[in-house]
Each structure stands twice: as structure tokens, then as C-alpha cells.
Image (cartoon, rainbow, N blue to C red; front, side, top):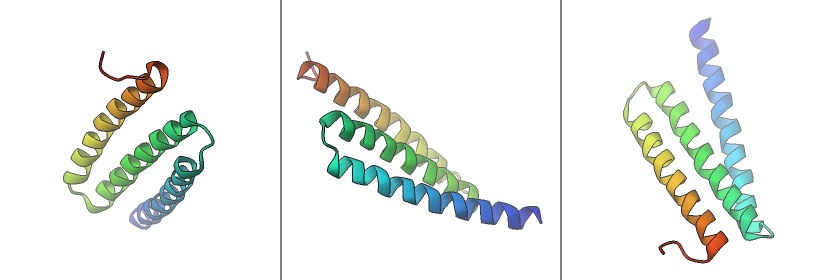
Length: 93
């Protein structure tokens, strides 16, 4: 029972994360302001990272967890750089 519950839970989580990625992509493409697009991009990388973690749990391999860690680090740096660019107009001073 617990293995079937885990399988169905992972499948539902992957579908929901895919839908959340579609909504975030819509926000990135149709955001009325640049700040909305940055928030949509932040949500997109976060949902992509969580989707990789769900794939890693399902398959039992470590490579998905390492890829999720790289996405998390690069996403944070990218969000900080975009926020600084929107606030000051330049990234490197």
C-alpha cells in the first residue's frame, strides 16, 4: 500500500508542478511589468528544481538532486542580479 501511495503521490506532484511551471511561464511572457516577469522567472526555476527533486525521489538516483542544487544556486544568483539591475540599472559597479 505504501509503495502505491508514494507512486501516485509523486505522479500527482509532478503534474501539479508542471501546471505551476506553465502558469509561471505565462507570467514571464505576459507580465505587465518587469517585476512581475522576475517573480515569474523565480517561480519557474523554483518549480523546475522541485520537479527535478520529485524525479530524483521517483528514480532513486543522485544526479537529479545534484542538478536541483545547481539550479537553486544559479537561480538565486540570477534573481539577485535581476533585482539589482532593476533597482540601479547596472549589475556590476
